Amino acid sequence: MKYPSIKTKFKDGCSAEDKEVILKYWELKDDSFEIKPSQLAKQLQINTHQLSKLVKTNSKSKLFTEICLVCEEKIVFEITSQTRATQLIEVLKYECSDCKSKFNAQTKGIYGREKKPYRLKYALEFEFWTRLKKEELEVLKKIIEYDDYFEFRKKYLNQNYDFAWTIVEKLDRLGLIDICGRNYVNERITEIFFLPELREALKIEPKENIFYETELSFFISKHVNKRKDTQPDFMKRVIFENDIVLKKDIEYFCSVWKNNDGTINLRIKEKSKIIKSQTDYEHPKNEPKPLKDLIPKKWKED
Image (cartoon, rainbow, N blue to C red; front, side, top):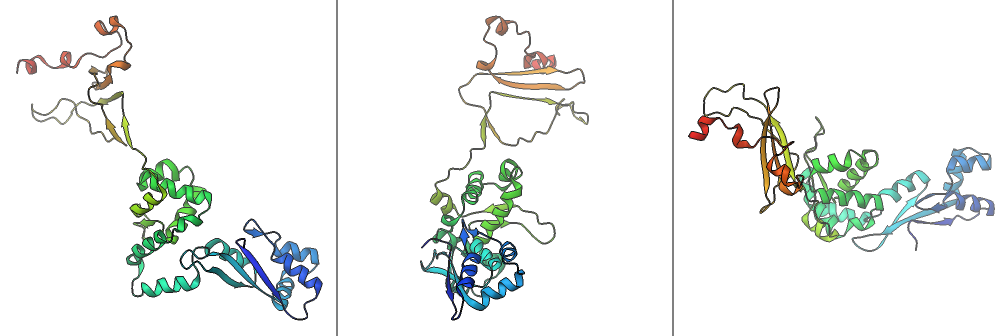
């Protein structure tokens, strides 16, 4: 059987013309209905209320959304309107109502966030991710790759918010992830959690947030509140967005030079990235002064 699909049983006395209308009303294509009730009613020159009454009076229909991931039985619902069927097709294709009731019975007395760990294990055990659409699975993989909500938000979610956030909330409802930190005051999210076993099941490696730099440079302001001689003449607090690694066994030039505004620039640069000219090495035209030339004489003597 193809999913989703609809089976209709006509009542006694239903005319051939009405049967044709009812079958047209329930006709599916690519998980959605081929024709809207308003369009069909217009073709028949009746209103949508009359169309709905015709369908309900002359037939009974069942919607088969999928095979339950838990018990492997068909997930089936009685339906009387396209609106209800559309909701069921979108949401209820993972577990049947009986299995959902059993899960709720097993976790009876456990509420709110205390229930979420059980739901995470349940979704993992029965592989709920296998029913996700391509774009939904892509968002889940991005969450796992970044393994950090703020990195995921900055580098993926902000650029794709219009469609991605709805998917994130769906993944949370299914129990594939847990959106942590939200409350009714400011809706502030602190973390998106998922079970480590989910990463293993999907075979996803985390994105590497360590960057190997060939050059590191920034300016340092003068220490205006210096009170003791032992305090530094220049000072600046620096916060890096990522881990920065200087590779071992690589020769670097460490240089400092003064700016007109009283600040200094600090640069650490890999030797191999500097213009490979012997003349430049001996008499650097564009290189800042070596650190030793900027150290006060009394420091050298000490």
